[in-house]
Image (cartoon, rainbow, N blue to C red; front, side, top):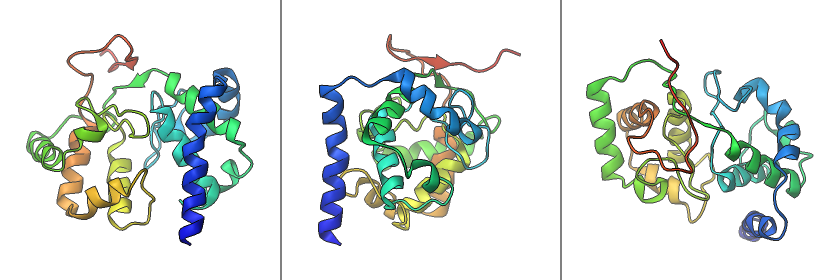
Amino acid sequence: MKFLRMVLLAAIVSLPAQRAHAAADVAAGQEKAKVCAACHGENGVSSMPGIPSLAGQQDQFIQWQLVFFRSGQRPNPAMAPIVGELSDEDVVNLGAYFHSLPYNTKVADGAANAELTAKGKTVAVDHRCSSCHKDDFRGERAAPAIADQREDYLVKALTDYRSVTRPSVGVAAMTEAAAGLSDDDIAAVAHYLATLGPPKTVGASLKTVGPAKK
């Protein structure tokens, strides 16, 4: 089992290196992603409960997850038949395509609850979430963007990490980070992250889809 994990890690780590030698084909990724739209949304913005938005997501994070799904390390009956035939090139292209899409900043689940938001912010600070996910919670490299993600998905992801039923990128970073979270902590931090909205300062490279006009 240890050997299998080492082989899997080597395969995953090699993907970004492959990309350095050959640029990702965003158009090919877009073509491959057509099947993804049914659940993850036409433009990578999910409206389906429990399904994450992928628009603007960190491409290395997407690559990790696709390899986890493909290898069976992250079991998922819905994803398994879709990723089973993906080549490493497909994985890199899909990561690049979804990363190229405008980042979603719409709040999917209504207005923020001030009390829950305050508690969630405290949980995020206490657990140093920004050390990996950055101050704007839009992630970096293999650390995913989690700001304005679906709240129900964030709850499930944190619960899965806490129970170690979902593999973590790196040296068990998320399984360790989530280990001490209570159900209330998870609900609060998920609400806080899901309702952040557009960042106060938008960098030149940050592409966003803002809240719909009323």
